[in-house]
Length: 352
Figure (cartoon, one colour):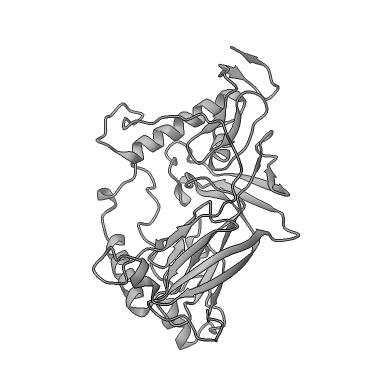
């Protein structure tokens, strides 16, 4: 996966109040999501498992080969010919929403991320996977999209070699990937430059609480309608710095009231013991990985390949026969109707 072209965003948008006075550093920008959805005429999206040597993912040691599913949207529902029998209501949201950093904050980002990128990979591992993924994505002119700034000019080269990439979430918001940021949600973003320079994009039809295969949300083209309010002096009043400067703050996300309704759940547990039997000390990553693998193993008993199971695990759906998948935010939840069949295929036959 080419991380230099991962996100396509709209913006930056200069935000002013009703009197035409722009947002100022130290203000808080309240962004309300009024409406959003798939781009009319392009009602489809995709999810994918990335090749181990091309980005990988949380389970890349178990699923090293690339796979893709195309999803077609019918109103609020999605279905895929690559995963037969699954149909679920989505919760559309933007994956990226944020304000622009000041030069001071941008320098802080570049310095700390450069330091991280120079760290030995042997000292930082996540379940001993993600072996090919960079620890940080530093500024690079490659595939740099700078709007109206003409490529090849001196200004373009300066910006391209300093501008932050959008893979990481930071103090300004950015790549948050919060599935509940749908209609009625409000995001309270710190303002670091005059006008705030709001940008957003990376539209998702649906996503779980995380992306275990990296390309875990249903990526799509979409539209977004926002309403902004400037809270003067809001950074100092509502946000608390968690670092060495007043710039080290975090946005506040207020989720909206819209969400598919599911009432029955099946939960799989994970403990801090890996597949080799090695005990780890309070390792949430190992435990989370085991819970996800337990869910995948269970779903594979009903006629689906394990690769097919990974993709709906990030969303919400229902396979034919057997337990009905009601909500899958990376830890399986489903309705079992009081019994769990030991075997069942997509034809609907089962044995107790």
